[in-house]
Image (cartoon, rainbow, N blue to C red):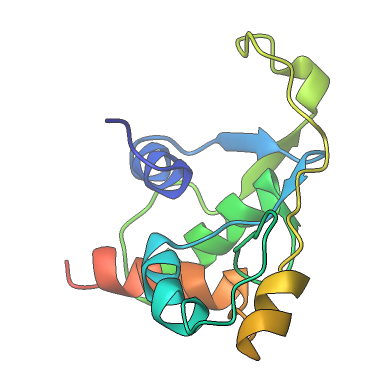
Length: 137
C-alpha cells in the first residue's frame, strides 16, 4: 500500500521547501468516500449496460491538485514548509516508466443521468479530505 498523491505531496511539503508536480497532465481527482456513497444512489433498479464512470466534478492538472491540497492545509493550520507547487512538464518525468495520457478526465454524464445526482467538485472533496485527515493535528 502506498500513500495517495495528496498524502505524498503533503509529506514532501512538510519536509521540503520546494516541491513540484506535473502541470500539463489533466485528470479528475476522486475521493474514495464519494465513491463509497455512490452505490445506494446508483443501484435503484435503473441500471443500463455499458461503462459507468464516477469521479468528482471538474478537472485539474496534477500541479493544481497538489497546490489546492497545500492551500487547504494552510487554511486549517497544518505546518508545511513548501507553500507553492512548482510546475514540471510530463516529458521531464523520466522516472516514470510507463507512458501516461495527457488528458484522462472522466465524464460522469451517465452517472448523473441515471441518478439525477451530480458529484461534488474535486476541490470540495479535497478540502473535505484535508479537514478529516490533517486538520485535527
